[in-house]
Image 1: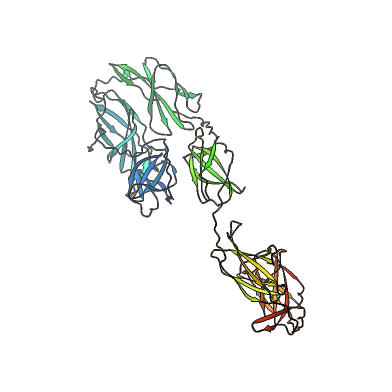
Image 2: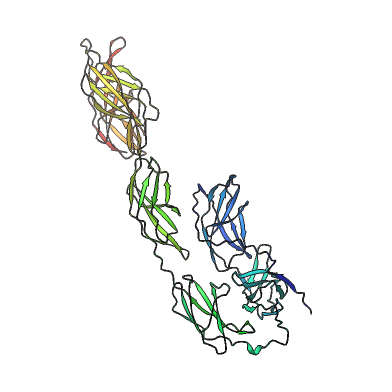
Length: 612
């Protein structure tokens, strides 16, 4: 049976090399994140997917820190990558002005196609006047084969696929040595392909005047196969290779494969020893040696030796320390931090502590200047920086810097003034006052003075009324009300307090009123943390009752005037987890003259203490 041969030209085949290698890291300061970013093998492609970003015009794709293209949808497929190689991948979203507005996390992904088919065997390579013919044995369940050519200076490249077990290639350069290998494939569906192991590579030197099918080939001149390949003195970046020296040869090519990739000729030399340099730390290598001799101004190669495997030592990387930190542009809730460069650093983590609390990592950046936001005003912070470098997929850190202490500015809080104070009821020894509200105020401070005396602090209240008792008859008094607001535990007060003067009524002897009895059986029942219920026995002839309370040992203040013998207090008066003392007394009122009243108080009840 004759097979239809498929011709593939490596000179005209367009190979899409999307992955552009670079170690440059681009720092992008973006305002939001792209979620659900993932990378997976999809047949012979590397597929990237992520959650779409609203109002985005498109997405940029970054490989190893370099932008390699843009897409309009929330997925991208990459080809042309190397197998068993780790890549750093990231995507960003951009708006209609192509300004990047969001970024994904960076993923490190190692390419390893699924291999479920057998390895191609019996690959034969022949050439006729520059044309190369490949023939191989078929693999069970395979429905196509990938053709790889190891091109000098470019590496092992997939130049196309065939459905037969043979191919003819053209477009080679005379005098150069090329390698050829085949991989079996099985298309499962539109998105998935199974693979086999690539065949053992066969190398030849292209000779446009050579005809492998003619009878002029002198196989007796072919050098022997090199044996006893050995590797020793392996360091992070070097290794020494030796082999058994052959007679009647002109030299040797040393072939090297990294992380199971394609073999590349790294040196041609005489003798049986060479030192490999510029190796990658903590990487797997395979080395082979092939002998050659010059015949008619052409290199004639023997068979390649068996490979020798070795692994370079892990790189001893010391990440430098941060020696200088500066914090400036400090405001109420933000500050800018900058620091010195650290040796071998690929990035930096910013650690922040508030008010001597534990440190938390709040930034991970490649920049050396960041702005800290969402800080609390009038607070003490400490910031430290630690440098790191990615080594084998993990961060290797330097030492944390010394802490830099800074204080955010106090919040500029303005509290309005009380505009008006009202005297609602006035007798010879009692005054009830109220005042206008102040927007945003937490509460009010109350000050009281007799005659021209100095003001005394009477306490604070969240209400807008207060009762002064036990005043002297026919006496002038002054009251001062000051609004306040609490922010982060600090109290800010009005710029100006409002003052009101009043004079109590004169004492009268024309009417005698009996003093009310002392309140008895006074009880307090605490309910639901900051709710209490007060009860007491009624006092015969009493007009009403006045309830006073003291918080944490402070002065007593009147919180209720009522006619019944029970009272409920809640969070408007009481706070959580506070100590209180409460007392109650009865009072009687009588008319002195139309519109004027006199009040006589009984003695205070027993004081009852409680805690919310």
